[in-house]
Image (cartoon, rainbow, N blue to C red; front, side):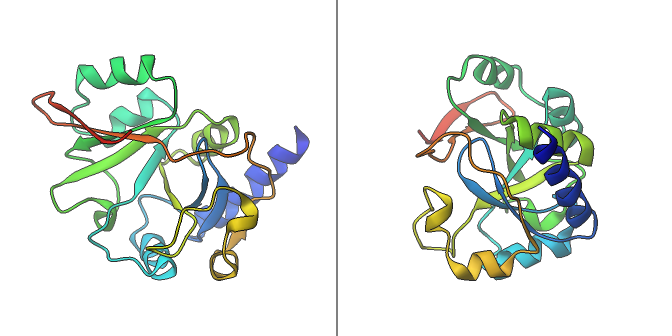
Length: 189
């Protein structure tokens, strides 16, 4: 696990400088940055050639961190996350302490509690949420593995984490929207 430790240190230094990274998440390869750094988030929008009105996902390390970045986590969210059999992203109302350009126009933010050991350690050490968006130019298919990631993306990030994805053929997470009134809506199965 020394390799993982070294990768975490290298990745942290890039994140702290406001850089953008390409990294293996608990779902697919993702482009990430400090979710509290608006300039870094702008770099991702530019790289993906994506409209800023399209929101991105944030990863947190655990429930405790989740509570620091959402005004009020509905009880039902804990139940969904506890029993989810696969990585699940939940869209919450009224996010806090993140860069404004990552928050959707309706004042919501998609957040996933990372289950991947590398992501979990990285986020815990960074002590802030990390953006996670698929490693593709907007409108292009989501790469299923590292080989499918375009040169434009590989050259456009500040650092590529040198660790393999643990499982092959990963899919994006489920996405569920929970309103403050605890209404639950499935956005992506």
